[in-house]
Each structure stands twice: as structure tokens, then as C-alpha cells.
Image 1: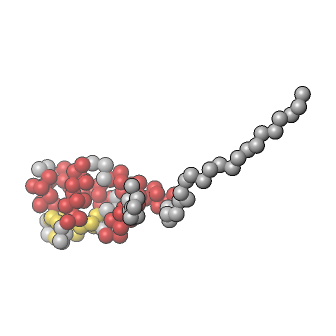
Image 2: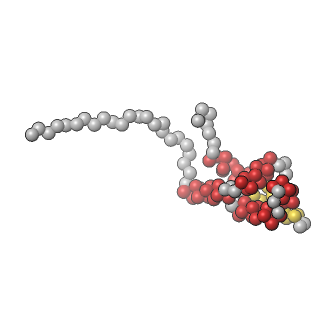
Image 3: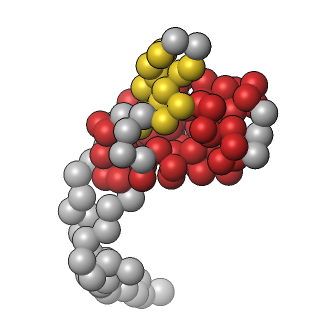
Length: 118
């Protein structure tokens, strides 16, 4: 019985090499916790509102905007602060919140697309 040789072809070069900066495991874990904090529609609305605000926003303004009670809004704000998305400034009896620009840059970096990406 003769042994038959099989020619093995090199795999086709069908894929574009990955050229993006790599994210470390620690960076991925930290970023995942940010996205987890945004896993509630009210929190997404809060972040959107703060992203378009010209200055820090009082929690009292958010209760009306979200049609939620003050304790519920405070709960959502605490989650966003704990995740590191917001800064909190106490002014008398009211708390004022703003987005951390460094964190928003990190999130936008994760979602960036180069021209021509689809």
C-alpha cells in the first residue's frame, strides 16, 4: 500500500490585522464597572443630562427631570459616584453633581470608531 502525501496550503490572508491599542485586564475590569453603573435607563439619562449641562447640576433639579423621588435619585447618583463617573459637591443642604471628564474620555475611547469603520 502506497502512502499518499497531502499538500497543505497556507491559510488565506482574509483578516485585517488588529491595530488598536490593547487594553489591560485591569483597565477592562474598571471600564466594565463603569458600563455596569450605566445599566439602568435612569442613570443613562442622568449621564446624558450631565454631559450637556454647562455646570454642576443640583439633585433637586434631577428629581423633576426624571420624575422620581429624591431618595430614588440619590440612590442612582450614589451608584454613579461609587463607579467613579461623577463628582459630588455639597452646597448647603443640596448636592451638586458633574461628570468626570477623564472617565468620559475612557468610555469614549472604548467606543471610538475610525473613519470608514462599519
